[in-house]
Length: 222
Image 1 (cartoon, rainbow, N blue to C red):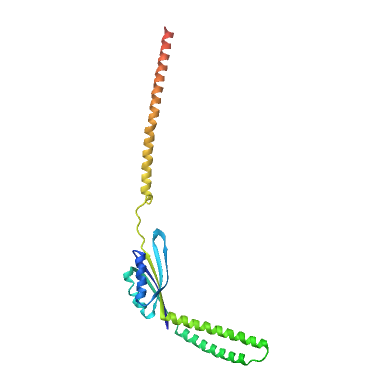
Image 2: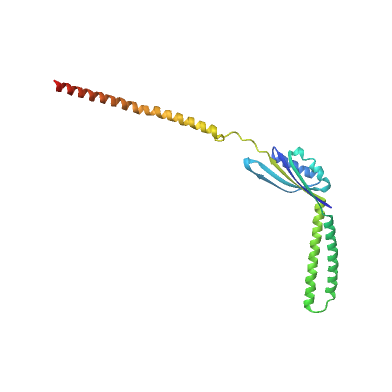
């Protein structure tokens, strides 16, 4: 009695058609989707996780049909032999049922103290609880040995985004230096519009003052 489980990762162009293909694949091999979820991650990339429950004897067939869905990145399989465990729990069930039968007979014929009767009832309840637990575990082992679980993760490939401003520091730095230089020249030209008129006025005043000084000197000499 072998329990086989697996994990598969597949890269696809679009998540929705891929999910549909996984569902159809499970159905085609007599299985079903036990659970599924879809998440949206970085760069708006979507990822879907689906758990396929498929008859154990058809698991290899499912694995052989994964390539048409997309690019298979990884396939990890595990197998666990539970035959000995199954036999052990079957023996526990037999022994517990035998004990249950003995306690049932004792309880039916007990005529002693009330405390003794209550103790028998509690012991019988405990044994019956063990039987339910053992039988439940047997059902679990049998079901998982009959149906294999395959976790399929399907994700879109990340697209290369168009180049955005600021993504190249060197190019951006050169561009900023050029913009600073142009700004400096433009500022210098703009400042000339103020400095030149002031320089002309200063020169005119200097000539007037010089002429006045020359006139005063000539008068004194006369």
